[in-house]
Image 1 (tube, rainbow, N blue to C red):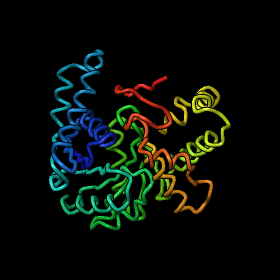
Image 2: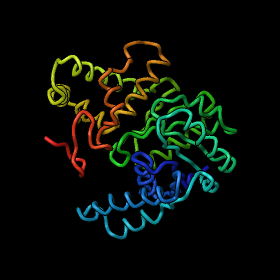
Image 3: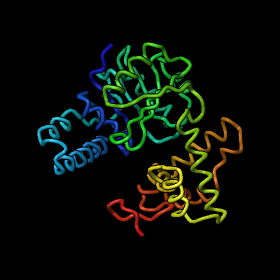
Image 4: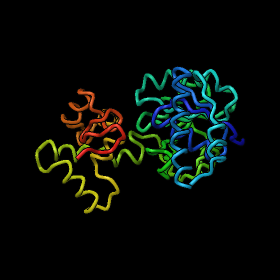
Length: 290
């Protein structure tokens, strides 16, 4: 089976990034959201991003136009009937994902592969909600997808070897490096990452150091490109909390518990860069304020 057309469900931060990566690799892309206006907004965002690459001389105007032309905005998963691969990239909510996975499954042609960009939810559970469990797999893109090289491939219990082989080849065609994880809470990356982000938050909560000091320590003492609070704000604090809760619930170990400070920031609606405030405050351009 050859992947020619990729459907992406969700035109937000992750979905639009995945759509950009797929279109840049030459795939036809069907970009869907709850309404076609949202999908069109996602394509416009991609156009603006690649437009900056043209301004910097990293892409020609013709290449930009061709990339954007390969992205077709649609109103919902009912338009995925011609797709060879569909990647669900909705919010990290299990009931929402189950609902959307079922809708995609109903619309897709026989033999097409259904992937989820989930960062913590059981692929086995998602696969069991479909009529094609052996064709369901996880494609966990890192944020932001156009810049981050890794795609974490997650195999459900039901995922066939053929499905895994096809999806790995597809990710590599997108210019990505893949790792493979079995279906376990948090998979590989977030099982390591989320406890680190939470521990940094516990240190801040206890007054051990400031957010800036902790971030500087991670960057200069651990050689991390971003500090834990900068990264958490980029990911979205609601997403960090959701993954922490999945890890704590499903593994049952208190080392995965979320700090009160993180819960309070989410309750306040201070979710990071996407809302202009999280551990730091950001201006309209997304730059961190002093």
